[in-house]
Image (cartoon, rainbow, N blue to C red; front, side, top):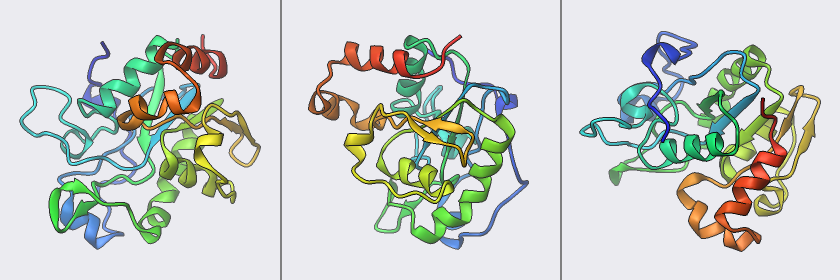
Length: 208
């Protein structure tokens, strides 16, 4: 199983950010990208979940300040990519703060278009810094956010999963994957088994 990244793996792009008042109100901390700054693969989630502050490890980015460090989604996507041969990826989110649902404070709501736009310069800065060969958005909303950087629209998410989308605007290939939280449901619906899905990732993404 993967290990939780150390705090010094975090890549904070600002001491604080208050561009989105609702996100500031609901978050515990900013969830920054983490991993090698020369990684060949950048993995992009939508936004951190609420997480579990009482967990011994894998508390989630809302508490650790490190993207994709929740017990379910974070541990799962890291394990999947490691099994596919991607050992040193950089993990981040399109939106850096937990988008609290005001009616259910421990539940995510979908980030607004304004919140996504406010956070997009951070994602662009990360891609400029890491300069990966491949950008791997996980889920529909993360894929839309990544393609927005290239001024492109998403035409059917499931049809795009495991596609290699050439994006010269990002100087990288974009390869959408299923969100790890919904992987069990959608893997068979796209014609794969867990093993063949992992093998397809290994065949598509750059590995050492």
